[in-house]
Image (cartoon, helix red, strand yellow):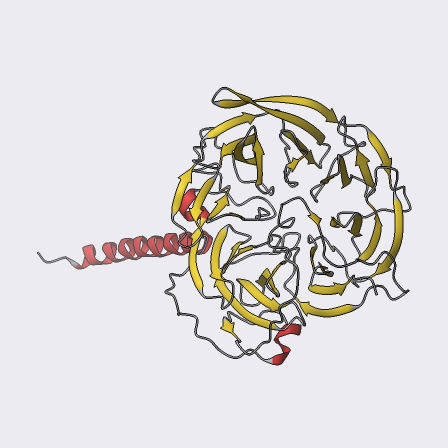
Length: 469
């Protein structure tokens, strides 16, 4: 069939318009789609030598390397996960820790530059692991340093676009045996070999499980429990367990209420002889069986409209302490066995002026709860919800982190001032203070192993020697 000139004249613009619309549609879809993780095979990241200056410069564009020549002394101590080995932010150190310093403060052993954010490290077998963000390359970068001197041993990167939103990184990896696992700002999970950084497996929780990336990006820190990684993706599964060595699913907890991922992390706890995982989702708090992921209990009595950040705290004997910012205050619930499942009872609520937490997770220690409350003061509660003391307006810590070691509280304020105080319900008893960082927004959780305390500000990570001299 031949087309007349008139048909050709009228047909070409229509075809052109249709092609243009199709091209524009494909471009829009690709531009706004979350980038998928590239498929990798083991050994894809070829070893290369890292320059000596790598320990003092941020991650370079898209780089992955392994530098086997970096010495890794067998230093004592371990801080293998968010809030330490027992997820309680309490350390039992084998060395004597300093209770006072000279005017210059505790010695600085090393400092490395980092991408903008609040992501914090873990420590294991003389190595330090940090999930950084490389703004120039637009990539998450899992980095491994020597605890001795900060020399970078290896780095593994994958592409993901993250825009500044109160920093870019804010999660803590977990390490166990020969594996380290990280969860990135846009909910990408990476498992690598702890010694070489060789990639074992990756997950994209958004693509594979329908996760909604929280506002201000992911704050959940992965949990390694024996031979499994425990995650709370929301979306298709409230919680899930995958094999540590392969990333293959073991069990998934249904999510019929469609609770979404929050900034809170998962707490392992045992109640009535049953091990469970407690998680604050967007619509409440739930406990699921560590054995098979079945739902054991849930409550909608605790929700925060703006952001759920602190992790639940195990206060012993089936008590779970919950806290938050944005006028949420805090609450203690009691979990008890009830047939095949468990009952949940609210023991008390505490108004935010008495005890709440904007960002950091409070610490349960020797029958009392310690935490920095809205307004920045440190406070101590007993197990009835009664406030025993506050640190006073002259001792404020903003949104900075804190931990307890050998009966001592170590607290870092927003601008990098470190304070050591006695951890006692008798009152706030500061012993020493020093400016250890010259920065701002020093919000990343601290890590402590063998008297080496790792702290960070917005753009750098520093290792301090806090042993008694």
